[in-house]
Length: 278
Image (cartoon, rainbow, N blue to C red):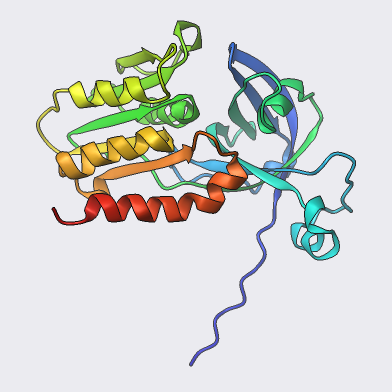
């Protein structure tokens, strides 16, 4: 049997904070840049993401930074933790990478960091990953998500031609969280208010009169409502799996470490339930 080729360790990217911008009361943009991004490249996906590396306070790593070396030489509690964020925009000419962060004061890790990030600060991250871009052969597109999916939805809308048929739904806490998106597509902004996350999205997509033809759908956000919409689209509407990009970016009651540890099992369980014959 032929030996498998040795898997090369992934090398983190390094960049510096160029500037920050408060987009809405709960959305902060951080723009990264620098010549160190010369080897960073995307592949036309609109849901590209990177995994930011955050070291524990007071821990200094040797330079040049080597994640494999850190994991070999440092105790586990001193390893950097990762937080995943969608690429809102990448400009290869200026080598500027824009990431948008949902922030709720001091809650969480990445959000508070984004609020206090200063120009010149060094940031390390892995990636990019990503698998979705609107299929130009589809008859129409369905985009639905909460704040966490807004960067990917915005990137998808901006990539589509003006004549594309689109039904886009974005749930945010209130009107102050709407953003300007460079697209002629109509966006239905749903205000959550005191309702559970995703309730308005599920209601809106369920009430939607589906146009004729093949739909290509992107549904991402909190895992609970994503599960409901997956059932609606995959089971009730019988949309083929290959025409769906649908996954939970986060889950109520879990931080990213806890959600990522259980996500595969959660997804497998949901798929088994919804794909089982009646």
